[in-house]
Image: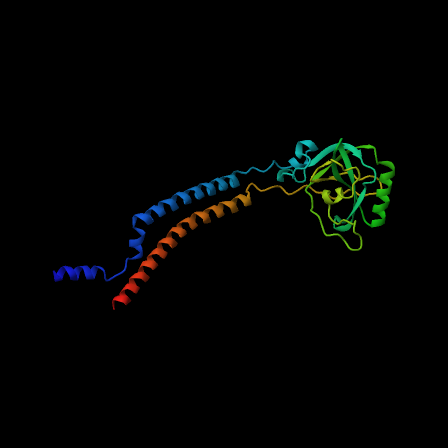
Length: 272
């Protein structure tokens, strides 16, 4: 009898090990759940990685092929990455009073101004067009005035590069209507006849400038890589999430083990 009592006392002299806690059915079940979650994350990571590597960029020189504007982007839509800098052609009518000036425009490294206009390509659809470059504000104003006299209300066919909106900037204290970014949204706020008007989000940089202006320096965009780094970043994120699922299982099991060890030590202190 005393031997049996001694054996029981000896078996209860030590708290459970972390391994013993992890091998309990409850924590094995949690481990299986972590494996399932990690497997889903691994699948998503592999899918993102395949998309990143299998991405085929447009053929070299495709942006230099002149395409109809309507084939590249629709009014109100963002410009898809493969078509940034695509040469397009469109026809329309210049809207009177909307030849506006945008500052801080560089041509071959020289700072100057763009003269822009609203080209009405459909009954209630317009696109902002950068018509040409001028080295100083006086020349830009003179060219805008000349365009108002001879071009406003007339039909025009424009060939140029379609480029994404540069975003808006804070109003200038010296000139609240001044613009230093090529933003169709900012131009729209100063255009005429805009009720129920659909506007293209990107703008068009004309290849050929009219008399009094210089052609806008707009080189072909760099060729896209066949690796989509954004998708690779997402794949890495999914891998991290998969590893985190196992960490959660380990952390929960360890917390349970530490709790039992603490309870064992407390019971031992009370017994003594």
